[in-house]
Image (tube, rainbow, N blue to C red; front, side, top):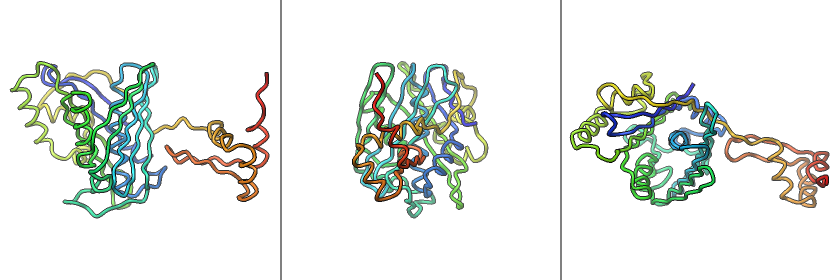
Length: 294
């Protein structure tokens, strides 16, 4: 089971959110039939959305949209936290599923796939409050762009690392990452130690491939024990269903729906977030367009 953990480092001078998201990202890859670079881009974004949703104080959601000028078109990831639920749910999609670029320095070139020219949009819904923030994309590499967003839009100093390892077969074999935030009063000595630990950590995906969990990553960064707070499981989950898909058919109007049926034989509605397909035949129109009872 994929896991999210939060806690403190260096005697409470830094707070962290860390995750292993391998199964979640592989499920997204499978559902959308993503090629490697597209899978890495969406996987990093889903991990980040899960971490940020986990950090909400109550019930709510986080939506990230990386709108670049690269071949992916856009990357959208959403994380949702329910008050009593034991899991954080994430879902998302990319503009073009079948994107796989040449490696850059031996790594998947997510930056070029997303594009360094564009904007990151963040929508945080928490209770009855909605906050929208934006920041320009620095590199399209997702983690660097998020760190810049936190600095510019939320005035939070963070270190963000996100990684996805895709095998030659296309399967995702490792995914995860972390967000570390500097808290007020953090000392120079602790900051230097954190920077040293981050450099020594090296590749996140390599550590995940070796079996590191969220706490293992943080212990490696801190060079010792960490103060562990709460944890939750993480999963790819979309709340779409046949009834919601029928609502999309109803928006067409009865005349256009009947025209589509005559032309195609049925009406298919595909959920952008998870790839689920819902098919409606002529006999379904009677209940879709039925007048509500008084």
